[in-house]
Length: 133
Image 1 (cartoon, one colour):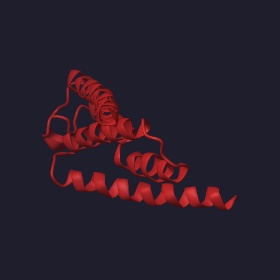
Image 2 (image 1 turned 135 degrees about the vertical axis):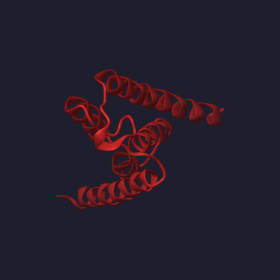
Image 3 (image 1 turned 30 degrees about the horizontal axis):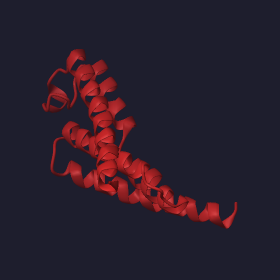
Image 4 (image 1 turned 30 degrees about the vertical axis):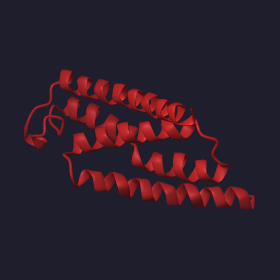
């Protein structure tokens, strides 16, 4: 592996650790489902903002792939929605493992999460366009 690739690998690793810790910190202030929604929408907004900028390969590796990749989590969204809905219990309604989750609630949460992420990315890109004027 070339030294540049090794350097980028370390940047992705360090950024991923920082992003994961930031998502964990958000989870301390919100219920699980709300923390995930906040992290995913905020991360999409930041990624939208950064994707329109001319970033170095090293910065893109550390921030976009590493930090924002660790901060946002499609796999947690999929787990929260599919497993909890299929099992009929979970965190979507805020009741922990004793309160039933309806499939409609799970699908609605997924739709809000995806739409929020798309809107966040769009707003992030728009902020950059306005700042460039």
